[in-house]
Length: 416
Image (cartoon, rainbow, N blue to C red; front, top):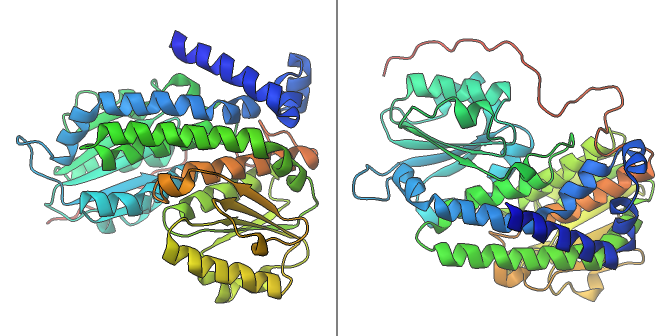
């Protein structure tokens, strides 16, 4: 822990010395940070690259237990399907890794909302077949998380459970320690964000869940996370300033485009903009090819278009075609394109190209956390520009850090 804290101090100083727009927030007095309502959010965004290495080390340390959960050792029956569940950002974290895990584990893998496990429990798992439910939860105390686990533990004895959480004292972390069907992967307490919006908790939970695809390749997993740390550091130092400048414009609408694993990142980036603007800036998420089927009509002169550009040749070709179409039709006020080797011809006056060397080598399956970082910075500086407080951007208290309790209804008993 002491080593992590020292790394964070060193990294914080480095970023502050290189990026004036971040230094303005990081180096403000405690009174200024409290008054501006940004002290927690800026710290939690900046700390991410360093905390990722700690998360990777924790996942590797629990590799044997995770292999047992999946049935990848000789003592256990292998699972037949895997589900990643959560609510809001936690669901999007699952979406960032589900396509990659399905390919790597050679299993049906899907992300399913915690609420759907409560309202449609019969569609959740295949009865009598060993399954793994990965519950992704910052606090581990949300009503959906606990109720979904309780229901499945009672109804599906063949279902195993992995809890990926940032709160060592949360219900998921401590409530099921004696049940052999469960395992908790608890991340560093620094990732249990104090800000209302999830930032470092999100990216760390994505990387923790992503480790399930690397159980037979722990060295490659840690190398990948190290590479992502370098890319994130480059993005923060080189592009926080232009992203902040772009975010300060008066947008009425923000559109996020992505494909594959990066679609989950687009959903999270969109949510950050919506949350931190208290809904004043409307947001939408689409795939590049899906945009043509109606949603393109929503793009007007007040629209910020955020494009997460694939490194995969086939997906990239379709994405570039769509961006050219947006340019030909003069749609949107400004584009922000995040990727590597971004063609100059995609950019119009005022557009921002966030050029991130190493993204292609890291692969689309792994770079969702880089996209999310760009989205966090856009949302943070847009929030400040419109006079809101990033740590608590809901002035009327419409949303809260942890969803409050609500009535849980008992599902009907099903006889298999």
